[in-house]
Length: 304
Image (cartoon, rainbow, N blue to C red; front, side, top):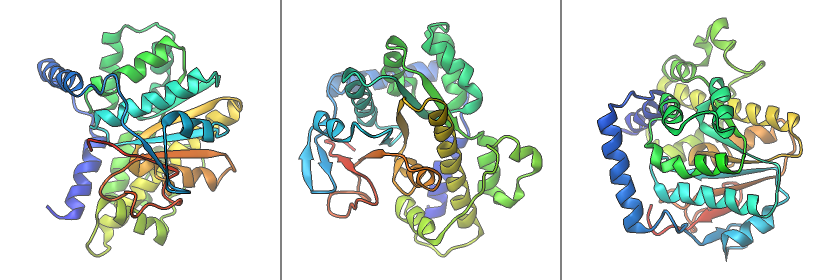
């Protein structure tokens, strides 16, 4: 499979939330539950953290203490890695238990059109079974991976914010480019959204997704889809921040979006906002090649 096929598969998985048979979902959930029990990751977070600025090692408590003045905390993930979601919950818990209120959680995995459902969930007006159905309308990863985060938010009345662009719009950009969007498509995006793909961003996409071929129309379309994703999520975050300036935000997103050239860059282009970025260490981003232009901290995990 060539690099573009790899990227297309990644994009397709995110853009096409499937309707799973109940039996398949149950089997997947039971399998993951067994994994959690065997590895103990339901109780223990991965770590420690590698602080990029001085190449030191930190606990999560130390890292949150050092960055507590930030308004936005990005905690990246590989969607199917349970350890990454344990770490995300630990960041949320650490900030919340420090008494940093109000606090909200931004979600890549929910479209903005589902905000009313997220509000109902936090308010305790939706049963778990109802919310799980809504979750699968938005996302194709097993519910159990994110379950404890959603339950913690509900228990502590922490608002959840849907950030994502309608997937049919991103899908169209990935297939035909940003210029193919009609006025009707544009109405589904925040006002004034553009899609500026710079050479540095192209290089970033190559690094993240392992593109080794020549640039072509498909590659450009893919870059435009990614930058549109980042831009819309950044605008939605800033809109929430402007309406709730005293609220801290923990953003849960794939590491390609949480990476500093992703959503954080789009925020920086529009507003000077203190941010902290936590990303998982991977083969493409590790202690030997990471820079402060990538992230502030790396999770050093036993399993990746």
